[in-house]
Image 1 (tube, helix red, strand yellow):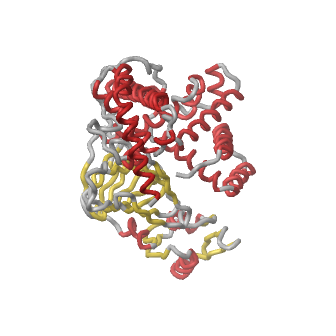
Image 2: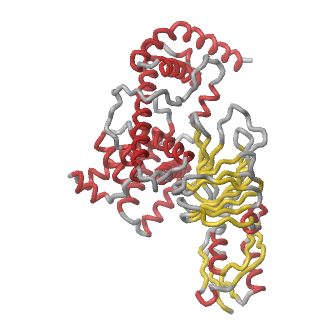
Length: 175
Length: 319
């Protein structure tokens, strides 16, 4: 059956891709991570992403392609770590009366990670304006005053941020 | 997930900005409706936008602002121990692409007013949606998270859940629910969640409780909670679960409140004149036809029902 034949071709291509490129990719990631276990995980994750896309046989320059995906994953990895650290530090600072259950903590962290990944693609002043509006609930005029921007600019930033988030929400943002 | 056109996204963003800037005028509200009706793509984009906003609404504000606005330190080398990663380490297994697909999978489900729907999740868990309901599911490496955004659902978890699947967690604005072979209903009220346990146990945790401990509840309980505390724990009433049989059951409910309940299922405007607002209504009313409800009301209580525009505009007055 053609479908199975494709799968088996895909399997072979994946296999040789893995054999030929695993070692240098691991070393490449390792250099950027300083941690063996994490590097091994991210190396696997890079291959799994290609496997999931089922497009291994269309890759022309495997080294560049793998490195691009790995770079995205390493960036994402650091972003997650710094986010988790900031989050845990902040929780530790909270007064005891502000206690969050373990379940809520992990749900909040998960949501923060999703939103953080979306926002990371925005220029920093756009992100700042966006956070002031959607998180702090400030009026556009108030943001314009505080940031020393025109109202039109605030609106333009807001639109830019929304569109970017919508687009990222439907694609895989590491690619 | 539906592919959404760029044009729809741009227009949705325009509407959001307009809506946030100031309250829309009636004309603008109509234009927004028209825009939504004119293209399925617009509806998808708008749903995406609402999902994004309601996701943000679940976060504690000060924490979210500080964490998301933290200084950019992508290049700093951090050594804070090994964190749970997207994938657990281990030998690479070909053919596990489904896992990674599900790990990145999110899905939105919703019903319109008057509509009910049942869906089955990949693990066999069934979710029934009552009228005007929206929820979404997202998967990450740690859990499968079902977030009820509005309305009411029944969740019946599969009895034999596969070892590979992460535990299902259900959240509302106020509560975190951890089912294990459980059958329950949950409804999002304004700043309150009500849970009805048809078959327990169910662990229920208020999101920001002072004493951040969840509690286990067994079959036959009905619990109400805010994000900070449990508000009540009673025996499960048939009123809570009657919608599963397509009925609206009430017991001594003031007419005004009863009509608010009916409004959840009805597209038009229903108005109750103040002099009869406090009549107590009891009974079980079929949900599939609002005319039957009106008939039952006018036969049992001293109520006149004036209907215009094919039930779009209905006024209840004293006889």
